[in-house]
Image 1: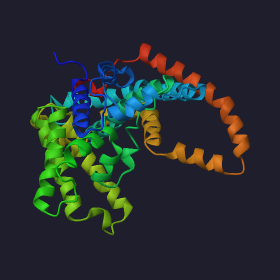
Image 2 (image 1 turned 45 degrees about the vertical axis):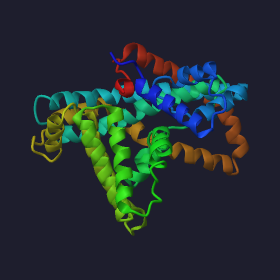
Image 3 (image 1 turned 60 degrees about the horizontal axis):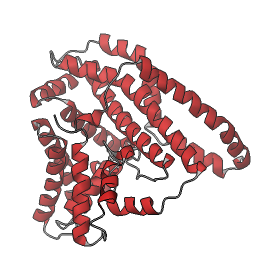
Image 4 (image 1 turned 30 degrees about the vertical axis):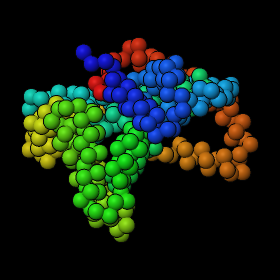
Length: 356
């Protein structure tokens, strides 16, 4: 049995050793500090990843306050809601679709609903865990790095990797990509090699299954295409950029979720209508869980953050601040009770990243 979270332990240990070699860590013999860095429980299993230098500064210069603690509690509750209310509920649809795909080609509506459900499940599951980690860190006086920044609003693959699992992307950039020369190399062959190695290592890090290797190559090809054609500089309407990214993430999700390339291929042909257009299952799932999809799609967008900024900066600033101080804690308490009830009576689905 593989130790839970072993892939994250390995990355933390590698960064620690490399930083000692670079001279960025002066106390390489600080066994207690190293152990605390590795087993700090809020980030123990799935991150967010954090360099020892950043962690050490907070250990010895930690600033604890009631405000930080209350912020942490709210962040923890939001993470619980993401995981147990949204991710686990929508995950039922995704799991059912991929289970049916093991037996037969899915009808067109169910295939699309299933892969969209998986994308939403994965995001709310993983970002929910990270919210809980960051929240517990705040409660203990630590500020852990953010790991997600609304990744589904992006318009390119390269931008996606700057918004999705940010600390993992930063780790590979810092300890693999930049030492190889990064993107400043003049030789395109070397640049292609660097990008290829990054994604192959990402695929292997997730698992040695052939689907992860193909998933890595798939990401590499799209990223390389964007670099070579200078995608970000091209005059293409945002609507078409979003469509392009949507197609990318759908096919990427199929490869990531499928147990084999054969099953991934079967799922793909369902997406293009080979399995027919029976609406029964899709209508049944949407009728049962439609409200969860609406909530999920809304929270994939930075709507609440922009509204909050707008209200704080307008003429109702004083009224809005007082209103939030009274209502917000009550809302968090209600959300906590609801999330806990979903955990107690709902279907238990393990975290998506449990297997990595």
